[in-house]
Length: 86
Image (tube, rainbow, N blue to C red; front, side, top):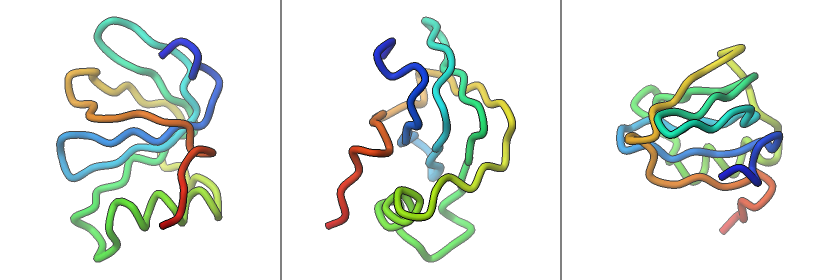
């Protein structure tokens, strides 16, 4: 994951949350993101895929200056620039 440091990433979590932001640090236990958007998918009718695709187009609507994510909760991580609309 070190190659993703400095990149805007999208992180799918085990819970109904998705997180987008600039990856700034990777440790064995957590990832640190800055200017992050921690989005609760239960708050909207939008699917995870649609929310991420829209964010790739419109930009990250950050609601956290800094955020730590526990690695045990992460399902997938990718550059936001690699998201494809389907």
